[in-house]
Length: 412
Image 1 (spheres, rainbow, N blue to C red):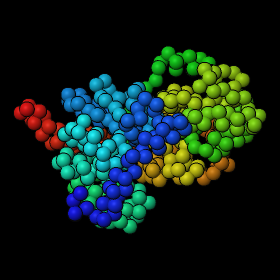
Image 2 (tube, one colour):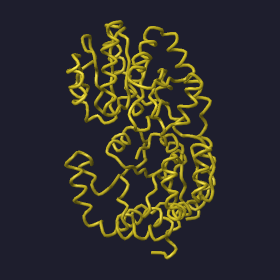
Image 3 (cartoon, rainbow, N blue to C red):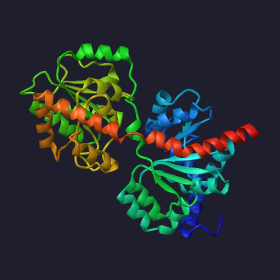
Image 4 (cartoon, one colour):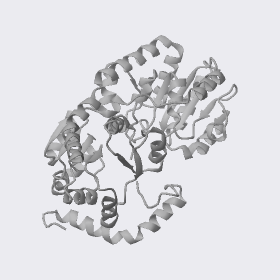
């Protein structure tokens, strides 16, 4: 363990080393609670959708690519969204023995860390092995920035191992630089270049036939409390829009049954996708409680509320919904995507609402005036196009490293 590491980092390494023997029991508990994939307990846990286009471009240059992520949901998404030939596994527990075993097995030539996940043991050990490391699509919120400022030596020591930090915005770049990242540049947000999620066209056609001409509103990636607000909005709206169909895609699909109970208590009829039910006539609320459904939802609903924004979660990414033609409405708690939402709101490309009452009013306004809804959807699409380009800028920054790897491969 190098003496130059700050005391806090050395204590972290010692604690994670000491805790490693109990990790299997902790993982077993998470498995029993449905938090882990039952056949992949030797691996460990992030979300990769934003970097799928980047992965595709790197893989197209015939590089072997391993993607690690941190949740069961991301593992399921990886099976559907990663290009052929790309491997996926959970990131190892950040304990020295597991990190060492992971690096010994895979022997990476280049490591890309996406967004804000900084695993101390993985970073320190990769640096010790001289593995080039780059932060891609780096994001550092004001909250995280102030927390790291409380331990400036720790974050400076971690960031010093990185060759390059590619930040989502100039504000993120300034924060990384202030914390000690040696080479920082703003390349833009890769989420702005993500295409709409794929969809099975046969299933989409069938759902469109089932829905017919009914007006549709949707709530995407919702969290506890937001479904109640949306269901209440439906109850208020159906007096003017009796054929209204509300679709809800919870952030955590396992909550589908709970949401169904809320709708039933409100006196509404419910369909659950996990039970093979369809949004047929007579169904008021349709709950998409299975994975990978947003591609269908965004293509069916011209009005989408983005979850995680009426509760203090930080908001969810609106880009995919906008790319597929939806008019987006969101609450005030969107710090995870603050610059994107601010730009969209200013350009009339999305609508900010303060509370449940304002949500109902906005939904009603767009249901009653499709032209106004279409204007917002078109402004949103235009804004997203103008904000794009991060993928090309990121690839240009990575190109010297990829060229060097190609030369080393040829030499060996």
